[in-house]
Length: 303
Image (cartoon, rainbow, N blue to C red; front, side, top):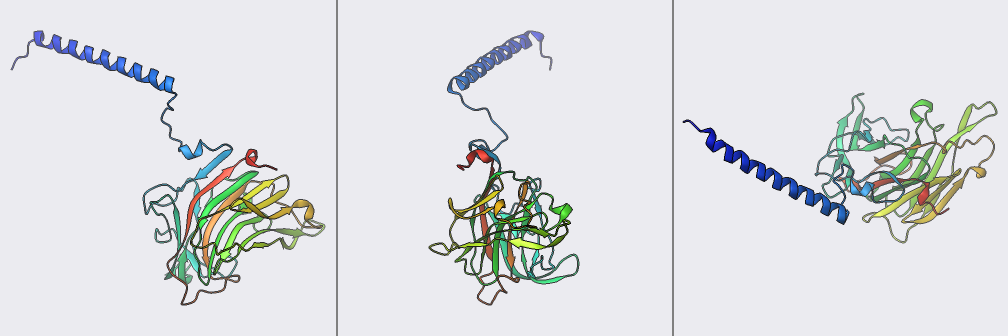
């Protein structure tokens, strides 16, 4: 079939008219957006731009079964006791570590026989993650719902960013929240090295404080926070301070490594020297839910 050029010209004219109309509509839309100050689309989540002082956050949004963002979190793997004779094998299996599809991270302990890559057997599995972004002075907080049961040990804590180079306890450890067993108590703590006159490490110091909420914290959401500035650490439960540690409280030889950025850790340990072993009444699977982790600069502090 031959299509004459006489029929093509009107079609080009129509296309031109449509383009002109479309451009005019687009221009009007842009003008309206400017007048109304409608924000342009952004790859940054609104939660990370609408909070004054926020440096970074993890909101754990995503479909059920999705893993953590590996550009932000390292996932621990293996058994071996983890320095406390703990009983779990940490894995990256979604059964132990995954988003739940409701805006939460689920860290789940299971009664499950496994063998890690080093050939170490374990009767339990769970998960532990460490942040890649670090937290400078300011506020660190997480909203968490912990499980309850014999042998369960939930924790939200930090290690100094130089941990891989100098090890523990030289790097320092800050326990923002630890709960165990029946979760009637919340523990906050700090650990660091003690040295002799030559700087040789000869031990460690710790300053532990326990708060006893009106009711066990398990089964409900609570916000656990650390505020850090000017050689001082303040620990808060639901916005209420219950523990404070200052560098000027230390004695000779006790180091203060907490003036460096911190890596954040979340984990659910099973068994160990502190909580003891699970029993037949421990409710497996046991899940620690994390709603968010947020890191703010010092502008949010009122001290």
